[in-house]
Amino acid sequence: MHQLALEITPEDAERLFTTARTASHFTDEPVTDEQKHAIYELTKMGPTAFNSQPLRITWVESPEARERLVQHMSGGNQEKTRKAPLTAILSYDENWHTRFPEFLPSAPHMQGMYDENAELRMTSGKANSHIQVGYFIIAARAAGLATGPMTGFDAPAVDREFFEGTGKRSIVVVNLGHPQAPGYERSPRFAAEDVTETI
Image (tube, rainbow, N blue to C red; front, side, top):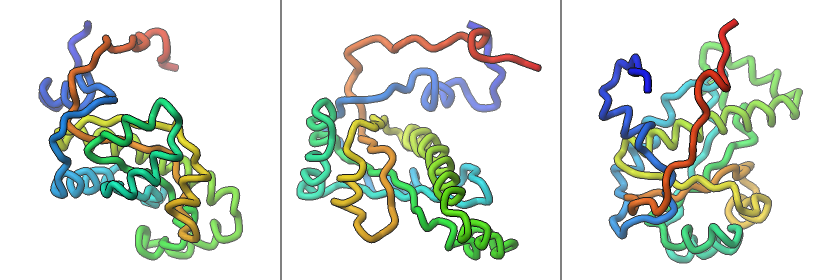
């Protein structure tokens, strides 16, 4: 393996990328409010188009809310979601553009472009929230946690259950906590020469 040209420590690279793993099973150690706060404070700093920040986070903690979510998860994701110390529904706000004066005070007039083009508004909201999902996962690792992101759920049903009338649209459900040791080897990653090119 090539020596990586990094400006963070090898230990930080391991925590964030090389030894970090997707988790399906967690210990009973809870996720603290301080960790939740740290995750958001890091997630929000990643770049998005026009600083739009369309991602919304719904922390699912109470047993009642957990069961409301579990019923809409696919079969293989139900028990792991029920048992995780914390679960987050990550969604995007389809009305993200109405906050242009807050997130881009230098150009609030740009809201008009999105007022007039619903397709552009939805495309941008989805794309930038998906980018923020990546920041969320790395932020959780930086906070000392592991994540189990899942797209195996009934998104329209989750939206009806939790977000009726809010404009939020769910995209990913993420379990979080302190991981148990994985029961299988990491799946292979592509070599750089297979998937990158310089032109």
